[in-house]
Amino acid sequence: MLRHLPLITRRIEFTPLARTPLPSITARREFAIAREHSSSPPPVDPGLPLSDVSDASDVSMQSDDDNLSGNILEEDSIDDEDVKIIPKPPGEPGRPKSGGYNLEQTLSWPDAIYQQVVNHVHREAHHRLETKKSFKNQSVKQIQAICDDAVNEHSILRVYENAWPVRDMPKLRLKYTSEKIPYSYVKL
Image 1 (tube, rainbow, N blue to C red):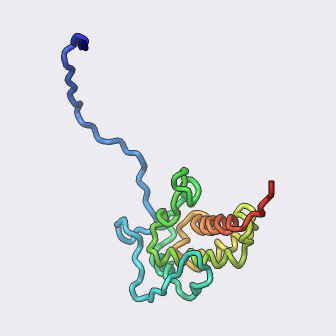
Image 2: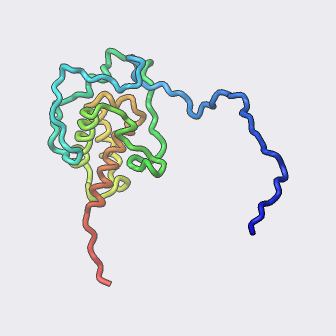
């Protein structure tokens, strides 16, 4: 026979407290491009022809003459005082589940511009760096030369502190190419 324990207290009723405003979790940030007060990325000039953008792993298909990102930040339209430098987000690129970030989502550029910049940086990395070595084993001068060249070629990169998107692109590329090298098998 099952016996229930005696009821010691009456039912407890909870009443909600007065609602308070939710706390602000993060501070608001003002980003550099303030042409229009919208959350969308900067517009691309519709008069420019969009070339077919190849896969990001192909570093030789995109030509240097196609400069879609050059019209995003025209030097005449924005003063240096109006431009705020965008700092690098915390963590490492390509590791969003380990405290890092997804580079493409963080930049939130139009796909054509993102692919054009990535192809340019990958092409330069292929010519200037040793693709069998990791990023930390590369020449600092060569990495800086790639950054300077990319910033000169794509004006959208001028608003980023220390050209961090350009530094992250070869880092991801070299991680892929250096890990692609076959390891010699050791017989046990």
